[in-house]
Length: 506
View 1 (spheres, rainbow, N blue to C red):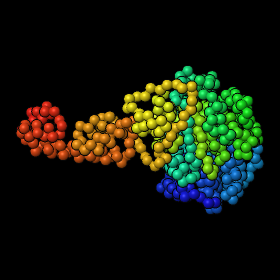
View 2: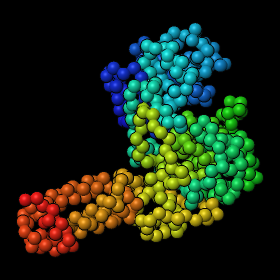
View 3: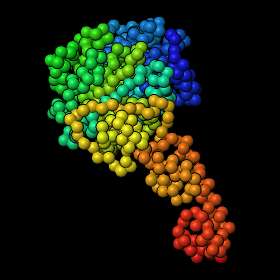
View 4: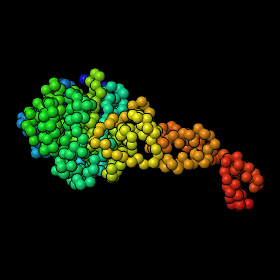
């Protein structure tokens, strides 16, 4: 099996982490990075040494996918899942739900690999970890976070980070993409929250309104006409309605839900690859694990408070193909809430409180009040050229029209948020004699408190140096006339000199 360089690096990092004495390690890699390939190679290597391996998945679709990857790697294996005969292979692909019922039939493996490991704090996963207390554990996931804020540190001792989405796009392992979004986040104040996310029954009523969602068919026709697409819907009722609307508009749309027979789901998903299906209307079926490179558009019709779910959904369309540019039609404001998929995210095993943005856009996303384009903070709108004011922008509703969200990071500039930018700008203006720094920070403030990290360091360093120089000059000016002369030189008011002079203790 030919591994990509970052995949080999990830495997070596896992080995090094185990060598440090950790029992359970979590590997984070973005959707589309080839996590299944990574753990297939780990399994092949372990099996060649006579080690037994269990690969745990939580859905039947993932059982089939993991089995196919192992077969590609030449690894003989059995399957522990409903409908499959038991076997004595040292490698087993196991459905979590089936394995917890068959503890008495299996021996403890040397290694357990957990696919989509962000689920691993749930009851069944913990039962497996506790039952096989001596097995080493590797978890793989694109999103090591949970909606309830619980960290994965209760299951994993260490975290290994893979490449970023931006890096994979630059290397050609993920495709570039464009995002189109409504000018404001839909009002979901009347939608109840259950288990940390929006209640599906309430979302049916809230989202089945053209004034909120926009006309998804019209926008698909305008921006992604004919491209294989997945529409992520709120519920079976909502997905059925969307599917019927697309079919009525002359498109070939299919419905796929967890309640359907597996054969029907496989047929519908396969139709995206061969052209028999243009739009797949899904309810929590293809958010994880589905690998269909032909899918070129994501239609987001389900609001979610889960950053992980949002990243999983958008990640479905980033599989590369020659000349492919993925299209994301965000009708629910998920990008505004959670940020761009290629934003830098500080993954951790620690628990953290759920962010409370209450309708405010994510720090990496801004929108133009003139044309409603959404983009990363910069002085002017990349679409219409409007100069963005520093004051808080007031938005208007414009009939749910989708506008393109641009990504200045694609050019290679790295930006970070700066706390207290206004205060620092005032300090620059007051202390610095060099117009370059004043000009720079005025520009940085116009970017809504974003700036290059190198420039921030340069400005702060220059400020410190200027402040030290001023203190030295103050010390040399022993008399009041000398201080008045220094104040005039610096452009300060005479009161500054009097305050310094009469505040001294001789």
